Length: 99
Image (cartoon, rainbow, N blue to C red; front, side):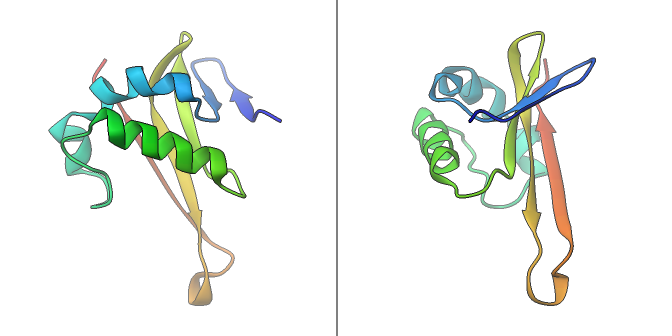
């Protein structure tokens, strides 16, 4: 079942294969990668987008969402559930394309 959270200004939703084309120009920005985890590739290629979306579609739990503004992909947001001494916590991160 598709996951979606709608607000006044944006919508958070699951990633779709059709997002790859719009994801590449947004994510292939050195200023985006500069402030994200080292696992965020730079340059960001179509292969990176296809891999990311494929991994999200196979994930057992939903923790990563596409950010959509006016029906257009604008960025990504996600959380990672803590484990071990960090059980009961989560780390949250997001990025938005320049547009």
